[in-house]
Length: 366
Image (cartoon, rainbow, N blue to C red; front, side):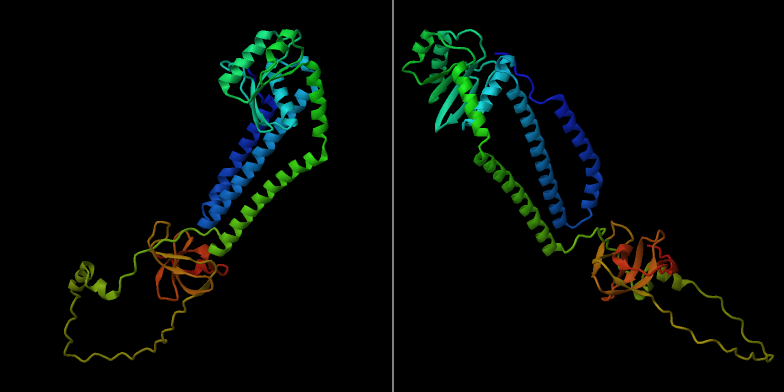
């Protein structure tokens, strides 16, 4: 048996390669955006990617298979190679209602090119694209393969004919012989079945059911993500910063003890001569510093440092009002106090900042 050629044409392979390249180029920025979402929305994105990949691969497979089938149907039987003739017989049997068809030709096939099922019986099939009559020895070999493979029946298909001895070898055996005349009749029967509107509608219904299933799965995943995490938002993870130590703890620290141990210069004792007393100058009453505030847009964390590695101290929730105490040097993090009195750093994307308000805040060292 001749070596089977690849069933994918170069054009189809180039198209698949181009689609894969385009998908890889667009996948990286898409996935970077997805990784910033909450876990339920990441699951939604994974389901969507799987569904799109499944549809694309299924569509490509249909295109390749249909192109191959059209090529085989257009060619005359004698113009086919032995391997193509086996594929042509497989398509014919499929159109005639056979199931579980599989190509088995090649080295070590033990005289079996195809196998499949028809009307509940398991068949082995041998294909001979001949111009001369098939010899009786080939029928005997197929009978032996039938017993070795433990199949129910065997089928020998040829484009030529069988000798009287060949028909005699198949008599009283579970072997069917299709010569060139019967083969042409079966091809005509299969063509009529392909045009059957009932069969075509059944195929279309199966494909529609598959698409509806994918749409339902994606819809349920989106609804579940909304119920668990709310609308999608690309909020950076929050960081917890170490709490600001109270003044009394600073006084008890080594730095505080060092500062308290420093002696201040003593003033000279007042001289005996009376000094003119200076009239006190009026001083303006100290004005209370107004701390700016803003509203939280998206819930997130309050962190101990203005970066993603800071420890999470508390959270801020959408709609809360927080005090703005300062900002980081790059302006991306704001030092705030939330309604529960927790002080720390929050990313600016979580807050509804008025134009230029962050520029007026002091830079706070972390």
